[in-house]
View 1 (cartoon, rainbow, N blue to C red):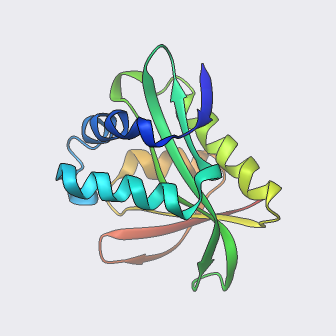
View 2: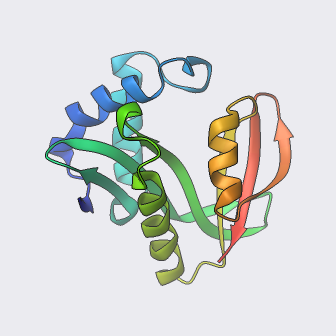
View 3: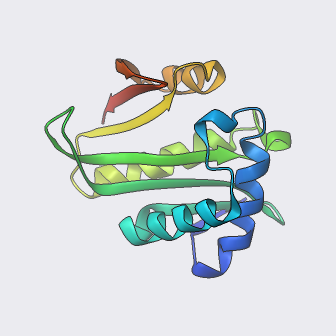
Length: 151
């Protein structure tokens, strides 16, 4: 498997994989191609060095870690995981764990002490995934739950 920085040319792969990955979880996702494209551009603009793609002959996952994010909840600049998804047929194969670890390493390399993220309140599989990797729930607001990990 190759994990590399995302390039602008990865847009179509991102859109396709995003839609497949959020099937059944649409209440937590952008659902129009236009919105997903704008989201991709925003992620690339926020922190291009923390936006990664995993490939196994084809794109199978993405993670976007923003090491420049100020969180009002934690009161500091930290590594914010804005996005992490893996193609459904490649889940439970370690790809998500590798992407999360690379994102965490990136945040640590930028001097961050905490990695944070928001996950859907009822996205139990994702919450369990993060809990097994040391994240703890801190607060829930509406349909979102905040999780952090000290690194």
